[in-house]
Image (tube, rainbow, N blue to C red; front, top):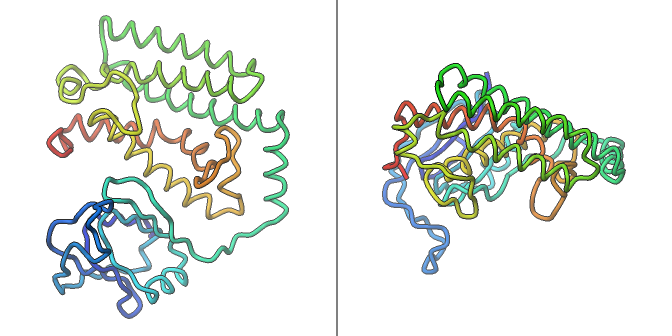
Length: 291
């Protein structure tokens, strides 16, 4: 069964016969934006190959400093394996994507036509927000029976507020209004996080509000990192279709980003990212010393 492979080690990734092998490297990696960097490897390969079968690889996510060559790129293209790259700080930077096999000019024209029609675009954008809200409520209702007292009352109040937000969605008349409702939903949801984490974990990972660019603390950094993983996972699935990942409906299409992946990631972040964060820090698999 094929699955995503995450490479956090540095080294040299290469084709070895008809499979893949990582020659790991030792040493401390230098930041990508180091002004003294001359483009040479900052770590030294140890000469030991660690092969893994290409048949099990659905996609590659590279977080380490990895050298590749054209033979590997050709092999990955033949196998249809997209490769996503992240910089020293864990930010998504690029995709090495095989030659497109799913092409449909008709679908691309229809996709653009839906974007250009305010009425059709709003219908699709509402669907993304409604789906995200549905999954947010699922997360809240999962933790609700585990709370008591004032925390339980706060959750009940938030669910009532979210119901009003859901009722307001059909009344939105344009995308900015819809985005405002979506932002309000997220804000209500994030205010419950300290209750979900419990006092002990919340003391280790304080969280007052969602902040990005840059994240202000460990939990905000973890959310940003998880969201970037969700973004590239969704992008991988879009590549399986003939949809254009740059033409979106909730987020405004722009330059240098795949806005449709942002739309779809909104739906899955509560279940895939947020639940994973809760589990990792509540079980102490991640602690503040890891940041």
